[in-house]
Image (cartoon, rainbow, N blue to C red):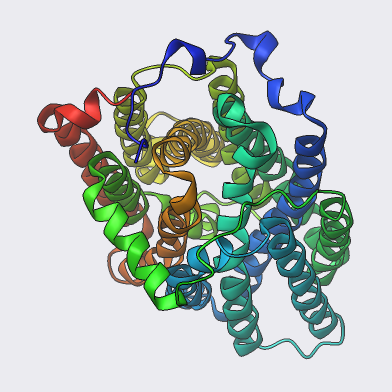
Length: 426
């Protein structure tokens, strides 16, 4: 295994803003990037629309969390086997099948809303289906980039992919908020269907690039081999542990933004703009990371971004109380949005770096399985949204977010102080 060897000068790629779009010079990656951008727009319109709809139907943070858990549980369980499947078949074909299934799922929801037959349980079923789809789709997307651009451009390619995701995070929720306000919830779903169709069409131009193997092993044996590999790879294991902590203590804050929108006195359009504030910060973070090239001291960078993310969450959790204290009153929304920009920047800079570390530390024959375990963390996010919703129901959303942010900051600082190998990870 050569997965933990240090980065040599030959692997350090260009730096600076002129190198920000480096991976887009590769034709096949351009097709992938534009197809991914379309799918990200679909997802970043559907997720806030679904959350808004669930909260309007139930007026309950707990029931809002249940919708997220309905997606997170199947996604988490699917990730146990999806990596082994992805290592056996063409990743490009997995992406196309998953995207097509999401077209049908989104179209069904749009039709239910338009005909007035939508019920809360429909949201649960749609979330469950989306979770199964995502369990295969995201690992395939995240592992195909090195095949399209090569190892030297992997960091830049992942950062640009995140930049595309964050462009959609900026514009998608805002568009969804406007559509909900003027044309009804179903309009956001129909536009999402259109974006998904564009994603399917674009991905069909990708070549079949995967090097397939393991045909002599059973699926169960391949899954087991993947977990054994992770167990003996120290840095991979701790990157996964840190990602789990980031998700468990902080990433679920997005599921409570509808509650904070209500607390600061804004409606659907303001809610969409608050979600977009996260995307603005995330876009700046991903483009900044893309310009760095394959930089050193990734471990220290991750620890710093994680700690600042936690501090920003603490401040965001106190925003409804801080606003009146500093005489913002009805303009407290602006303070919350500003803090969400910082939250988005730090969280995206962190996750871009951690995903790249996973890709570069993993041996090629294990990359799909390692990445599928990594993708359990976003699935864990959905489950944590449910738990945070339950906590918010009992003690309030501000205290829930404040405690989560404090725990995240403490964890990251502890990693920086006590784990030298992670701190010095290149």
